[in-house]
Image 1 (cartoon, rainbow, N blue to C red):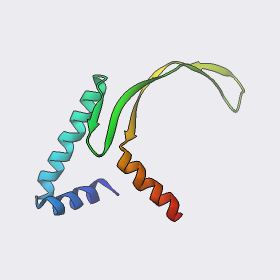
Image 2: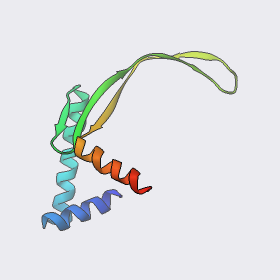
Image 3: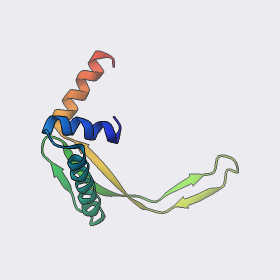
Image 4: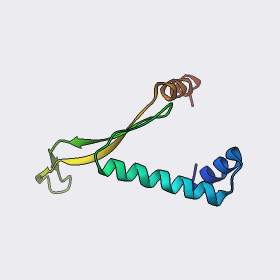
Length: 97
């Protein structure tokens, strides 16, 4: 689903203009980004949890030269889906899709 398709679907379901839904979605994404930048955990009921985690430093190898180098630790955003979403995904697996 593209950004435009999401806005269109939400506008139709909420009976709002696409412009208002676009603004709402932009604000939502901005708030999520700001809170993740503050290292906050964001829990969305019936959807899941967004949070940041520190990925440990590791040694990587350049496949062409076989040179080894240290990759420093990085902060990454993660998403843990709610149990309801996990169950829906399991039904997709069972259907072979």
